[in-house]
Image 1: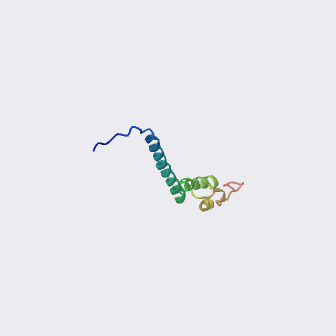
Image 2: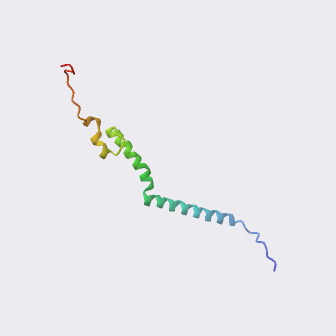
Image 3: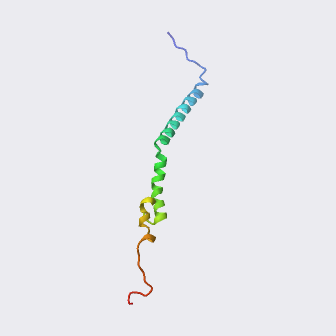
Amino acid sequence: MKLTHINNESGQVAIEYILLMVVVLGAFLGARNLLISTNAVGNFVQKPWQLVAGMIETGVWGEPKKTRAQHPGLLSRHRSFKGDGE
């Protein structure tokens, strides 16, 4: 039994590219859905931003809600215009 070679293979490359595109697109959408469901990007951005927001608002590295009591403006300081000698 002799196998004959098919000479008309012009559409095979197009089919392979389409299949490859479907696989890559499926992997991309699957990774996107995974990132959305686990909120990975939100955690990657939000947690460091909380530290920066705490430094901006209160001058202390930490979450703003926890570090508001440590703001330098809230410290109890007693000053006198008379000075120490009087």
